[in-house]
Structure formats: C-alpha cells, structure tokens
Amino acid sequence: MPQVELADLAQAVIDGRTEEARRLARAWGEAGGDPLQAIEQGFARGIRRVGELWEEGEYFLPELIQGAEAMKAALEALQPQLRAASAEQPSKGCVVIGTVQGDLHDIGKSLVGTMLTAYGFEVHDLGSDVPVEAFVEEARRRRAGIIAASALLTTTMVAQRDLVRAVNAAGLAWSPKVLIGGAATTTEWAAEIGAIHAENALRAVAVAEAALA
Amino acid sequence: MSDFLHRLRHGPCLLLDGGLGSELIARGLVPGTPPDLWTLERPEALVAVHRAYVEAGSDAIHANTFGSNAARLAQFGLLDRIEEINRTAVRLARESGARFVLADIGPTGDYLPPVGQGDPEAWRRHFVQQGRILASTAIDAFHIETMTDAREALLALDALQEVAPAIPVLVSMAFERKKRGFFTIMGDPLGSTLARLRAAGPAAVGANCGIASPDMRALAQEALSAMNETSGSATDVRLVFQPNAGQPRITGDGVRYAQTPEEFAEDMASLLTAPGVAALGGCCGTDPRFIAALRARVR
Image 1 (cartoon, rainbow over the protein chains, first blue to last red):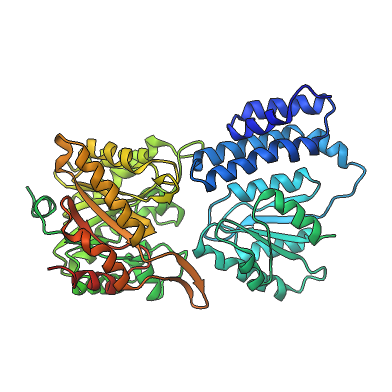
Image 2: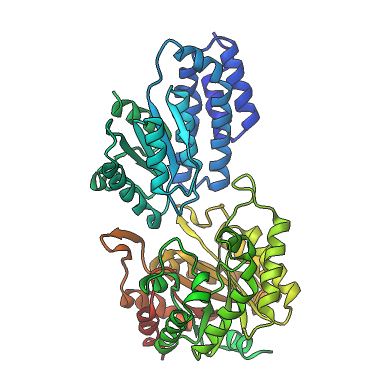
C-alpha cells in the first residue's frame, strides 16, 4: 500500500507544486500503486478542483497554468507504469489534436493531449494556430480516428465548423470524428456543426473512448 | 499644459471612438489578418472609419496602432515596416478631422511566466521603440489599452513616460466580472490595480473590452468609490471607460454582438457627468451608431 495519500496527489496539483507532483507520482509508481487510480482519484481530482476555482473566480490564469504544469509533470512521471499497464492492450486509437487557426490558447488542449496519452491513445499534437488543411492532412497520414480541435475565442470557433466540413469533404474511408473543446464551445455548438464535445480533459478521455468503441 | 490634457482635467467628458477591428472586418478585412496591414494597403478604408466616428460625435479617435509593436508585427512579417506603419496610421487618423488623436498601444500578446514566455526586458524595448516613433508624430496622447497584466501596463507606461515625457498617457485594463468582483484574467483586482497605475502618474486610468456596458457601469461605480476614498497627488488622474457591445455570438454571418446603441447609451449616459470621468467610448462590437447614441445624451 503506497505511503502517499491520494489527497496529497490532488493537493499538489491544486497548489501548482510541479516538482512535488512529480515526486509524489514517482513515489506512487515505485510503490506499486495503480497509476490510473493515482490519476482518477488523485491528480485529476486536483485539476478538476483547479477548474472549479477558476469558474468561481478564485483562481486566475497563473494558477490555472501552475496546476496544468503540475498535472503534466505527474502524468509524465507515471508514464513507465502507464505504459506497463497498457502494454498488453493495443492502442486505444489515434488522435490528432490542435488549437484552431488564429487561436494561440493551448493550456486545455495540451492537457487533453497529455490525458489521452496517459490513457493509452496515440496522440499527435499539432500545436496552436493550426489551419484546417493541416488537421486533415495529419489525420490522413496517421489514419486518426479522432481529430480534436480546441478554440477558446468566439471569433476562432468558426474554424471548428470549417474543420468538420473539410473532414467530410476529404472523404476519409474510416470516417474520423471531430472532437471539439474550448471555453466558448458547447454541446449545442458541437451538435450544430456535426462534432462531438468534451468540456474538460478527463471528459475527453471518456468521450474519445466512446467514439472509437 | 496641452489642450488634450486640459480637456481631460477640466471636461466636459470626451467622447472617444468605438471598435475599429470590427468596422474593418465589415469593410472586408479577413479575420486573422492584422489590421496594421490595411494602414499600408487600404488607407482609404481607415480614413473612412475614422471619419464615420468623427461625424458620429467622437472628440478623440484612436489611430490604428494597437498591434503595431515589434512583437506583433514580427509575427506577420511586417517588422521592417514598423516605422511606416505607425506614422501612416497617425496621418490617416488626422485626415479624419478629429479634434484629438490618440496613439493606441496594445499588449505584446505574450504573457509573463508561468503563463507564457514573455521577457519584460524585451517588452520594454518594444514599447520604447513604438513610443519613440509615435512621439514624433502628431498625436495628442497615448492610450495603453486592453492590458490584462498590471506588470505589462506599468512597463508600457514607464517606457512611454521615458521617451515622451510631455505626451499624456491613458492606461486601460481589460477586466472580467467574477463573483468576488472585477479582475483581469491574470488575477489583478480592479481597485488595487487602478491605484498602482495612478501612483505611476498617467493622465487617466480605466477599463476597456471584456465586458459590456451594464458591467462597465458597475465597474465605474467601484472605481469612482475607490478614487473618492484615496487622496493626495493621485487626484489629478482621471477615469476612462470603453465597454464592448454585449457578448459576441456566432451567427450565420459571422460573429455578432448583441447590444443595441440605445442600450449602450442608456447605461453610459450617467457617466458623462460623473466627476472624475474624463472619457467614454466603445470597444469590440461598437460602431459609429453607438457613439452617436451616446452623443445624443450629452447636454
């Protein structure tokens, strides 16, 4: 039984203590703890709390970034255990992810990518300010089952609709799904444009798993 | 004391202009294209927008220099034309016949760590560079706008005061309304941030963008109360407010803002005569109709 408490894992993320999160994750893994439990009941719980504090107007951008950095460090430190746990299982699927053209926001998008990787997906992150054509080309090249596009601004959200149209027009034989996210996006917007939606990184894992099931 | 500074200090309240980017988009600027490009390629469109605001009642307009700093221009391959872009933008603003022209100073677009990779030393150089170019043009003031980090705002103010000590500087931050009050996205609270800015000696401080007129009116009330509570040398500093025209929404025709000019004017009218308020205008989504509606409320 690992000495490290799950509450400690969550708190390291909430406090944005990157090196502490990394250390705790490593200790958890080395003590033989279940990496998925560490994520779901520990670190991810922390990042959810960070999100709540952001919604409540208690946390601002710096705290959000610190929390995301701590989360990322924890997931990186758990990689050996996660790889071992999924070694017997095939990749859950291939995902191409990026922030749409004209938009440089990437905290949430990077977190989604990191979480999907942690949960056994093959993720290709194109970064931010990604044109529609680049999404489609990478998806074609990688045979991606999911194309994930993030947009934070109302003004850049329209690119998500352009992406869905381009994917349909490209006629990719395996019919990839477009998964959208970002603060301005909603399930209604996703339905309107013919995409699926996830409101945060943890939900993205569940939505991606369901989409490729 | 310059005419502009005298007007700021003694009133009546100045009417600024409204949104520029959205007006250029309405005239064909492709979203994602830097508006600075039109200073070079579509000068007549800039003059047309500036003139429309002057005709609507703007006493002071902003030259199209919001993104014309080295950090932003470099992203679009326009760095080598930085001098021409800034100078031409002021000339175009002057061609509108506006009583006063403000040089618009926007953020560098990056964030300080841990949020971004911003380097304060480099930022200061950018503001010094842009400030130096603009200081030798026919501007009446600088307006540092849409700042979300008090540190960047203070840095810009310091840089402009260094290169152009005789030119008045206005500083506006972009606040959001949270449960606990008004904060920038970086977490700078309204009251203490305006106080910090006032202490650095600008001609005016205030808020632009981010929120619409109902929230801006509430913000203004808080700012006015905070001003009344403090005394001393900062009392010469005036207030400026420029809200958005409601929240943006995506429609079949692109992004639209919900508010009507009359609603905007109704919310802002009481601020026209509030002691300490020196200038009012509009930001994203506002157009000449909004300024005209506010103009109609001036006694």
